[in-house]
Amino acid sequence: MNRAITINVEADLIAARGARNAVDPHVPYAFLVEPEYSSSGRVEDVATIFLTNRECPFKCVYCDLWKNTTPARVSAGAIPGQIDYALARLPPARHIKLYNSGNFFDPQAIPPEDFPAIAARVQAFETVIVENHPRLCGPACLGFRNLLPPTCAFDVALGLETAHAEVLARLNKQMTLDDFRRAADGLRRCGMGVRAFILLKPPYMEDSVCVEWAVRSLEFAFDAGAECCVLIPTRGGNGYLDQLQRAGEFAPPTLTALEQALDAGLQMGRGRVFADLWNIEQLAACRQCGPPRAARLNAMNLGQCVLPPEITCCP
Ligand code: SF4
Image (cartoon, rainbow, N blue to C red; front, side):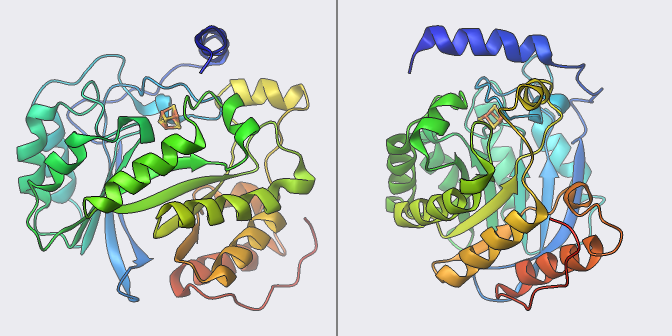
């Protein structure tokens, strides 16, 4: 990793940003329950708590998660308190995602002294899922896993982003494909599950190859041991991507590309594949064909099978 390039990109990224949103370190910035096709083959409710904590130290060029973070480490006890706050307001669910706009095993984000209290709050769930950078996977993952009862599965979601090595190097993810393989392998060997996040059409990738590379990235993730992959249409709005868009180095993917990537991913039959439908209205903006196409993607997420295509009048 070339540190000088990283520092230059980071300075540009920060300069291009707008302001953070106002967040409260004692309240998660969002929480919800939604259905998901589970590893058991049933559609089951999953609670997701979006924890408020310090910003991720990696500064990927496409990331906008810093918007709902704090500039400083939250105090010990704040994260368990946030979980209590959300669980008191959410309906029951079988599984839980603790997503923190960064890395669960970054000690500046989630204070490790809170791990026992966090584990105590989620021990009744069948699956606990956290997100983490591949380079931050290590003994702490197993340490947290061992705080959970054996009946509780523990999955770590890793950002692969793309298997295109040259594009990955330009994303400032500060990770190689080998780092991803190593992290996934280590987690699997210790009995933990692996999910992978894959960007559909990251910056620096041509439109004509974005579906092909999404599919190759799915194959890479499954080969590395992922059991579940999420296709995320790259979205602008973090300041830097908007600059890249003006320079012709980024444009969001089309809805057609997302449909093609999900179709191909499901046809692989290697594991669960989901299309991230957060903000799908932006891609499915056409009043005529947008809503039925978005509904088809949602039904495919929940059924894990390819459905007949909807009639389309735009890309
Ligand atoms: S590692 Fe994840 S949270 Fe951190 S900057 Fe990159 S995408 Fe954002």
